[in-house]
Image (tube, rainbow over all chains, first blue to last red; front, top):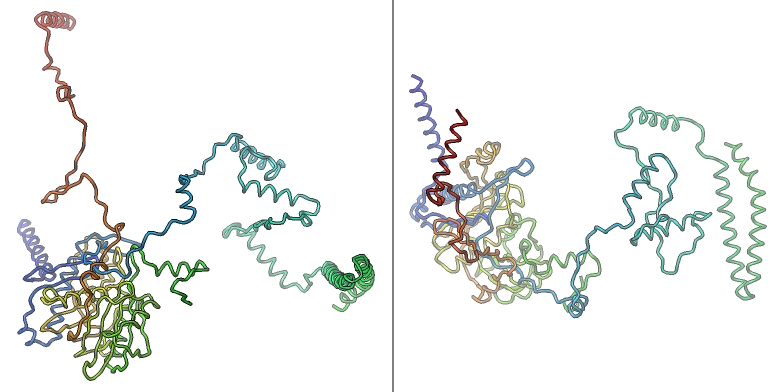
Length: 302
Length: 316
């Protein structure tokens, strides 16, 4: 009994397979040629003109197209497939039909001046590796520095403990550090005529991690809201006033110097300088006298 | 871009990239097509040009103004336009009493005309006339050429090559199986060429795609979508054989490298060749078979016996 049912099952499976094959197989006199790289099929079979005239043109053409497309798709399906980001993709071979190019193939470029010179002198391109033999134990230095940092001992900064071979970056960094280590934090240090301003010397901003301490983040947000709610002004009046005074002084002195400078050009340098300084001094005194009362008044009004 | 003697030195990196894109390369870009109208055009022709522009969308330019030129007589304006837009394919539509509803398909090599084939439209159904859902623009179409003429007749052979060039789209290493929707079918019959455009939306596709590789080939059902043309072949201007050959010349770098010492049988078996130095076969190292080793004589046999005797005694 079981044997019969197994046979039946197998027979049915075979029938199904045959039907499926029937639905995708197409009979043609001559096999059609494919160029899968271009997704093209060339069908060289004779077309029955009588059939073409009997049927409606469109229907005949459509059935012919269906058959040919079926064969083309069968051929495409024989090629290897792969899965790329949840999409099944079939790998196409190189196109076989020879099609003319758009432009002629590129000509080899003429050698540049350097290339010619190198050829003349026999200079060959040497590949530099990034690895450099470290005479003074740089690893040791870094290890000690890490230890110092961990134990919160003060460590001399960049460039002050020179290692044997210093690259241009190391030297430039040392120069920048030295420049900033003056009493006025490098504000009045002159630069050499062709020296460029140092880049990336601003403070590095530190950002809080995106998902960190939830309670601290909550606290910070609530504080921010509290500050926004409060009616007290966030402006430090003294600081603002001093800043404004300094700006005014600067403007005045610049104006005086300019005036003094123009006059001074005719009569020599001395007078211009003296006038500029004197004017600046007098102006400043006057400004200072006026400043605080004005500031206090302002505070009172608010 | 001002052209003084045709040589421009780029002053920005962007300009340099632009010029490098247009310069001759080993593997070339997709061929751009310029679609333009002639001195007098009919409704059929303008609509046909718009439809073909839609088929070739990202890599085609459609000019709105009429250009009063005759490509078969003077191709200088075509060459000028191709230099401007870096296009190597063109489609010129015109209409007059002698040649009604005329389309000239052509291609250029090095900005000079290579081939031009004139087709007359006898029957035309536009994209808008056929009301079916269209496939997305930019899909790489499958092309089918049916009919003996495409194999026997020279003009038809060139036309086949030209149409393949025109409609094939970018050359890609792999194609999404679900994206194989668009089919362009060209039939050459009785001196006429029928062009039909179908979309293939078989149900078997989506189901078979859910399976992993090794999926069953689906049964195709076609639905006519796009423009359908009945063309008749008119004049042709084909390139001379040597110009055609020059156009096909591929740079050496693209040729596949031949692996030395590997050969294939007629059955497909792969053979390799090993080159060795001359060997002295007498001193060849083979497997050692102890039993086959030469014995010195009876003395050795006696030794063997005594040793065996002693062994037996020990056991006992």
